[in-house]
Length: 258
Length: 281
Image (cartoon, rainbow over all chains, first blue to last red; front, side, top):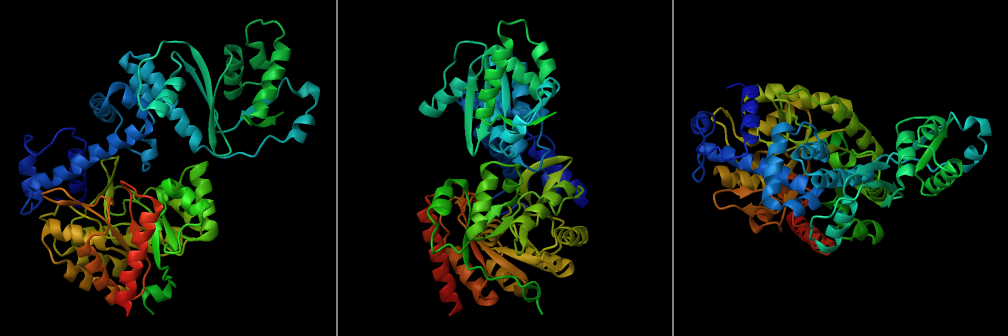
């Protein structure tokens, strides 16, 4: 067997969730390619790698989504990971990206709490190692002409994550971190931001209207367009001013493009 | 001049793998006099920002840091990942590493990244495949590359030579360094019933840029390279044998699972220094 064929055979074996020691043609294929040892059959040798593949990837996702695992239990979590990896096998050299699609995958399970929780845990990971950005230059902001604000675009700090949740999953994550247990919570629509300031991560629940504005700004809308898209609200302009000052104080805003 | 002399490979003394769990001990409290340098996992430093990057910068302020990769996949038939190489080049330059290391194995196949150090068949075909890839990587990064022998749990019928001859021929033809993992030699020698001493005695000493030491786990029918325990006595003996052949060379204690407190890790480094000093007398 050529080098490439051998390596492809490895990949084919490793992604099988169950032992291949007694699985169909695998023992015969193992006998053809591997020597075995005094303690392991040829296919038993390959099965060591298959087992490690699953232990490693389940452990990786358990580390990234500990509250999801605590909520569903280890056995169900492992079964979910097996199904997930069948749909999204690892293709990036960094294990950091193994869970890229896990929340989307869980959203197919008709349990909004699970997918909300996965999105929340993933958001903390994205905020944790997002690029750094210098603080907003107050002098540059002060120099922006008043008539330029309508067309200004607000560039958020790269760590800012916006989550529109059906459940307050961030509170469940916090519960797990404090008690090492996770129990189902009641659905309460929640608009949450997660961000990093310095090296620390922060969480804040936003007023729905403020969240809507921030979300539009994050998507690149101008301040004027984002404000106009909000429903008619008394004192909207002054509210936006207050929100803006608050976001700037939290270092959520990296710069303003006019 | 031999490889180490040509590339001025430094004898760094005894180092340990830097792990986030020990950040306060190392970065805030000065580390330990028994730990002279640190290894980082290259891929962990390829994120965009935040604590991993901050820790690396602070570590580099006071110590020599050597990047050790786990996913280069030098032995794979799949194309080398040029994005990976660009990130590695940036990392090596940023921390001014004298060299970088990764494993003689494959990690990618069938378009997947399997995140394991999968063994190569020891064949002429594999040598012909790997040598130009190592040359390319070394050219791109611009620093010497040390290839590490892996622990293996499987042996191929197609292998045409022992592992140590396979590694030696690749290193000679690619003109690269060798990271000699003594624990991996022991684990593989047990799993495949070969003579670990012969491995140590065959490896070309002038190309060894670094030695790895670690603990492993007895799984009953095989030994597993878990980096989860103290270095075993049999591995210390092999290390002594290796040092007597190679001379003073940087040595690293790896401890990646069931990670102990920093003082336990530093004590293991001190023990490595004692073994190394005795072997060099």
